[in-house]
Structure formats: structure tokens, C-alpha cells
Image (cartoon, rainbow, N blue to C red):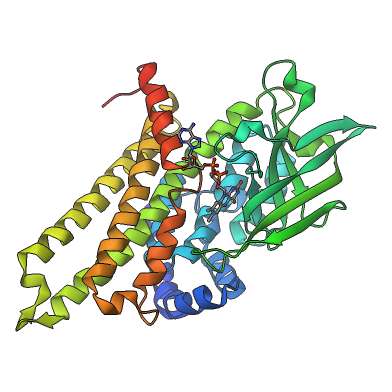
Length: 385
Ligand SMILES: Cc1cc2nc3c(=O)[nH]c(=O)nc-3n(C[C@H](O)[C@H](O)[C@H](O)COP(=O)(O)OP(=O)(O)OC[C@H]3O[C@@H](n4cnc5c(N)ncnc54)[C@H](O)[C@@H]3O)c2cc1C
């Protein structure tokens, strides 16, 4: 029997090969053309990238959430956009594992998420409900024996490519209990669901982003999670993982930029020596390294708290997300400067990394919201060093 260490080794070897032979060479083109690379999605599916955190009994590799973060980070070193493919399955996986899904639903869908046959998109943001997500207007109401969803979500990653949409909505049926959230699962081809305006993004290109419009979309009761009032808790479980994985994704981009710049400083000669030899350059590289390593440490701490110490762990997830997103902006900017004029030219990957970096502080809750969440936990002494 293979141990999880062996499984991870095999996965990482296949992944490194794929990154070298396919993802790396295509990364610039994906960015330039802003086209979703289905061939890479399929190749990731074949080696198990999307099934890293899916338990083995449901067709995944069963390596756990921390390895989902690791794999996301490794891909991000080469292509920030392609790392979204390793990151995105977490929404479906934790919805099904923790969301009161039936065993039949888990057996039906988790293997498909693991293989990449299905791709699920997470729909929370609305035009007037971003940081204040609970101001959302999308509503799921009981109507003649089923449920009906109405609303418009925006900035939705993978919109148009996804096979299902996980939609966070108001659920008036449980609103009386003070827990107004429901999470519903809608097929991409459900009547009444359509994709609206597609966004032209600065970075993270190749991963589509668009409005998801729902007008009278009918879904059966078993596609509504949280009818017992538990969706708020489920929402917490999902977004806590989202923040940490996103931090890891951001750190991967920072690592890629750092390594590219470090290598350049050792080769690039000015004033008769490699620019690495100048102490001012060394200080910059040292600061970049310290930032990246600190963020990795916080991510590891946040991962370690998940599941067994969630109450105390939440603060670390938000702290990790806030730090990693500052680090990636700082490090990619510095890396670009260390390349001089080359860093500014599209022929080199640094300017793409700088643009990719800018999305991280916004996605999955801004830096201010994460720090607010840190403070909220501090108010109740929910931390442990
Ligand atoms: C590349 C990308 C991919 C995305 N993918 C998805 C996706 O797949 N699904 C999805 O649902 N959403 C997605 N989003 C949306 C993202 O989650 C939101 O953009 C984000 O939550 C911020 O919301 P907003 O844009 O409305 O900004 P706002 O909430 O309007 O914030 C604007 C500014 O005000 C600040 N601010 C707001 N409230 C406070 C406060 N109380 N205290 C201090 N400062 C505050 C913010 O920090 C920010 O600086 C994506 C966004 C991007 C950029």
C-alpha cells in the first residue's frame, strides 16, 4: 500500500514535469491571450491536482488541505493564473464534506471534482455587497415544492467554464432564526442561469471572470444547504480555508518572482561584477526572502490549527492572508526593479507577476477586512502564540 508520503512524492514529480514542459512555456501566452487553458486543466486533472484534498474514499489523493496549499503554491511559482485551478476545488470539496451533503451527493460529485471532470465556481460578491458580503440581495425562496434563486453575482472566477455554481444567497426561510445565509448549488445549464458581462482583468488572466445572473432558477431542496440554519457555519469553514489557500497562492507568485530576480542578480554584470555583489542589492533580496518565509510560517500555523483548533486558528488564517498579500505586492515590485529595464518589458515574466500580485489583496476579503478579523479575534482573546 502506498503511504501518503509516496503519493505526495509521485504527485510532485509529475507536477514539476508538467510545470517545466507545459505550464511554464505557456504562461506568457495564457496571459497575453487571456484564454482559459483547458489542456492544462485536463493535464492537472490526470495527475490528481484537483483531488489533492479529496479523501481517498471519494476518488481523491487524500493528502489534506495543507497539501492543496502546497500544490497551489508550486504552480503559482510558474503561473499565477494556472494556480487558480488547484485552489478552486476547495469550495466544492468543503461544501460537500461539511455542508450536510448526503452520502449519495458526495459519492456522485467528489470523484468528478477530483478528476477535473467537474469545475465549480464560488459566487459570493455582488455589485453592492463586496467586503460587506452579508448585504447581498441574491435570494433563494421556497416556491411550489422547490426553491427559486434570483440575483446577480459579479467578479466570479471560472464563470462560463464552470459546470456548477456554488451560490451564497439570502434564505428568508431561516432568516427568522437570525441566520440568513443559504448556500445553493446550481448546474451551469440550469434554465434561468446565464453569464453576463465578462471582466477584462489586469492580472490572473486566462482565468475567466464574469457576472453570473440568476433569474427564476429552480433547484430541488437537496441543492439548498443550510436550511437547518447551519450555512453560516459552513460559510465560515469554507472562507477560512479560502483565505489560507489564497495566501499560499500569493506566496507562490512571490517565490517565482524572487527566484527569477535572485538568479538575474547573480548573472547580470554592472561595474565589472554581478549586481548581487552590491550590498544594497543584497539587502533587498534578504528582505524579500524574510517576507516570503514569514508568510509561509504563518500559513503553516494556520493550516495546523484547522480542524482541531478552528476557534484559535481563524486569526492565523486572516493574518496569513493579510501578510502574504502585502509580501507578494512588495516582492514582485522589488523583483521587477532588480531586473532594471528588463523587468518592465513584456518579454520577461516579471511585469506579469507584478500584475498578478495586485489581485491578491482584493480577492477573498481585502487586507483591511482581514486585519479587522484579526482584531475581532483579539477582542475575544481568541489567539494563542
Ligand atoms: C481577480 C479577482 C477574482 C475574484 N474572484 C471572485 C470569485 O470567484 N467569487 C466571488 O464571489 N468574488 C470574487 N472576487 C471579488 C472579491 O472577493 C471582492 O472584490 C472583494 O471581496 C472586495 O469587494 P469589493 O470589490 O466590492 O470592494 P469594497 O468592499 O467596495 O472595498 C473597497 C475598499 O474599501 C475597503 N473597505 C471596505 N469596508 C471596509 C471596512 N469596514 N474597513 C476598512 N476598509 C474597508 C476595502 O478594504 C477596499 O480597500 C474576485 C476579485 C478579484 C479581483
